[in-house]
Length: 310
Length: 275
Image (cartoon, rainbow over all chains, first blue to last red; front, side, top):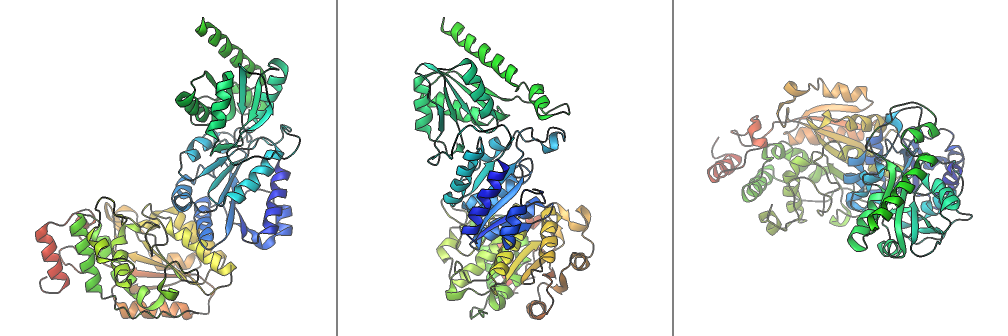
């Protein structure tokens, strides 16, 4: 996925000399190819994210197309006000890429972990929020972010969970991407980022009739498509490596409750920080986001629906 | 290089009276922090900032950014002199549905950025100066910051960047009126010697009387003629509330609204009729 990011960026930047990559002293080795191929389009702004985002606004105002790279704990979280006022207020064409979202930096603790970024960014007017699930979606999202010519936050989480798609999906801006069609009156899985992989595994193992959609566009999102999914399904299970407050689960719940009320299970990070140090898989377990715990949540949720209906 | 061709006087007394008119009509605060930067803006608009075809959106313009958005009434007063704001817009200040806000907003024709949350405009200006440098244009960037504003860390992040990347056509002008919202800068967060501070960050810097238009013009011109690749910093010593003696150095006028009587007295004071 990180290779796809680098390749996409190099391709876009070679085609458009107005692209400027700004990094806040992050991305060791990630930008080797970019620096080799587009050396004049690379700026390390130092460990100074606030200034970096303000400068990106200034560059956009003078006709450049900045891509701002940082860890998602810092870009967008540390600079949320600069993004709001300097960039999004005028919908300037700046793409923010927040890498390492979720628990990627599992050993480093809360400062480098990011569960709040979708909730914070999607409340900012004009700002689009993209969250690819694999390298193919990432390639599609990078092109979309460039084509949108507006303010975009692109979230990149755990990058080595494997592919969901077999080729770059052709996706309209805002549309969901279908992985498994499923049958009517069955549950539908809606997943984004790193959780798409486990969603597909669980669906394949236990719910062969379920629908599975990935959601690369958190905002804008095609509401009519979400409503159609709600209408044909018995219940929705949303999975994300993000807080259940304000993330994709909230997006789907908001649309469903206003248009087609249906039970929605939001699987994500509860209202807590990580306590322990450990591997990525260990932290998923700590937060109840390992495969076994997710399966248990889904079973419990579905049995509650049956009880409720009786 | 585009030369400034405007013949507009930018008479400081007229600008201050426009500010008073706006604050009286709109019943607004922030009079004193607008008064301290009147001469700075007058000199920049009259002698330095170039707007080809008198268009603040012309892509070849110089960039003037009011990072201390609280002083925006002074800039509105200048925009009126430039013909970019009408008397009606001035007289509608703070009316429902009017565009002119109490802090700088990029949607106003002639204003580059949205500021007021402090410490933003400086970095946007650094980005614009960087953009001009990358495009190899002669465009200059001027950013006006308040001395209270430079409590903000982002300013110093930007200062490091501007110096490191030798953005020599970038100039910051500090409106050093000695006050911020809750009191004097000395009481709240000492700034020490600003000129040496900017020099230590890699700027070429001069301190000047921010109400002496001749000295301001000479200082800015001197810095622009410098062959150094350093960015430039003008530390303009100013007086908060300058021009109306009963407002000068009285921080109440950061917040106080004008009564009809105070308004009349203030106008007379600007005209030099009463002290």
